[in-house]
Image (cartoon, rainbow, N blue to C red; front, side, top):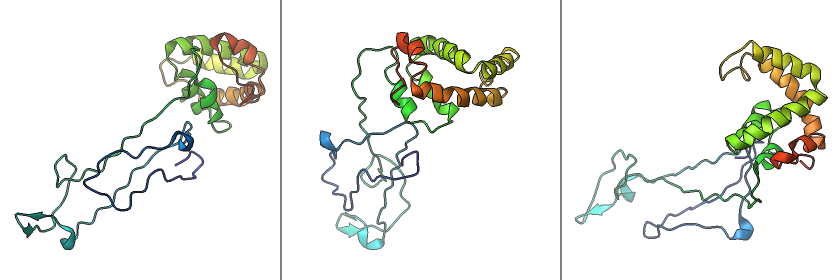
Length: 196
C-alpha cells in the first residue's frame, strides 16, 4: 500500500503448488519503486474444509486448528521481499533527497527520519547545515524553537514539548528547501534538494 492510500498487488498465487517452493522474481524492467511511508501486506487463504484434508496412511484426516510452524501440516504463510537500493555515488548522505521527495508536504516527522537515516556521520553534517539554512530564512521560527529546546531535555523534545515550534519552523523552511535555496549550505554533505 502506498503512503497515499493506493494499492498495488505484487504477487497473486491463486493456486499454490506445494511441490514448487521457489521464488517469484520480477524481471528488472518490472521492478517496483517504493518510497518512505509505503507498506507491504501479506495475506494467505487456506482451504481447511473436510474435502481438502491430506491423506495419511491412506486415510483422510479430519480438519483441525492449524498454527504457524515449519512442519508439512503447519501454516507456513511466509514471503521474502528482496529490496535493492539504487546505486549512488559514495556520498555521505545518499538517500536523503530521495527520501524527502516521498514525504507529504508539511510532514516534519518524515523530514527528521530522512535526515537521520544515513547514520551519525550524515546527521552530524546535515543537521547543523540545515539549521544554518533555517536560521537564514526562518529566523523568528528558529529562535522560538531554539528557546524551547534550551529549556527542554531528553529525546522527546522535538516531537512533544517543542512540537508546535518545530512544526512552525519546518513549514517555514520547507519551500526554501524544495526551491534549492538551502543547497549551498548542504553541498558539503552531498545533498541537493532543489530538484525535489
